[in-house]
Image (tube, rainbow, N blue to C red; front, side, top):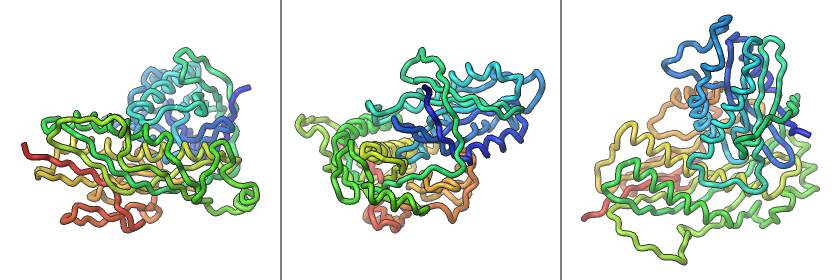
Length: 417
């Protein structure tokens, strides 16, 4: 028996909108949650066009073929979208909408796209799959004429995997989700060579973050101030019945108990270096789990992976910005605030997506990025700036006024020879 994907009605409406544009084909990503119990699809996002691309593949009889599909571009889009997903959500598949004459080519194209997207999602990831992770990913082909959907899955852990049939079940009401909120203090120091290039500093940072990530594997997490059995239920039965009855968002607090920079203390390492990089502050983490019989281990996985992802992504974004625009910090001590996290709700859902913004970015910058990456038109007033900041250059601190906590910042320290 194949897997069943429970699909929010908004996804079906999105497909209808794309079909009305009458293109020969449209590729895109499916965002959702996969678990041993159930699979959900909460968002579909078409692949954005390249800057040098025209209006996209128009419906021209006999002129368009699926050989034109750019696997690398779809994979790059998937990497960007994954950065905008909180814990518990991921790109779980791809879709392809075609005219009838291209339908025969669709399954081979979908398979290639799926494995390319999965490969890109693993790049620089700080966490490894566990035995509870589902490695099946979903492909959906929609015929623009008949509007018929064909849903299949592939096991991406097996390069020789063949297609398996799956059920595509549209829901009239959005899935219900429990939000896990957590603030985590981070204090990391990374030794660097003063002569290292920016790319080399980025590689060193990734290696150190990978060590730090291993220390989180056995970290204790409190939910609403309590330690819970990982295999137990996250919500007690009597509380569950009351929470489901309410349409308001259900929120649970979490605390990750980790000691600062405690990785591998048993094996001291002496390393000569003339510069260092520090990542310090409190970060806002968020994860989502289904309200339908959530397990503690699901919440543990969601919140820990969100912490790892948000730190890794912010460092990569900062280095990418420096590489693209050049370093503007020439002093002996350079304070570079990492981009701050901002959340945006999915229309009609309690799930919130996220983005990362620098202090000099404008309202239009944010709105354009959500439109390009997620095909969502967002209102600035709906954005939740959980790490809104005021700079205090004299002390090198960035205060988060929204949560009255230190926001994450990255500091480069150059020592005298």
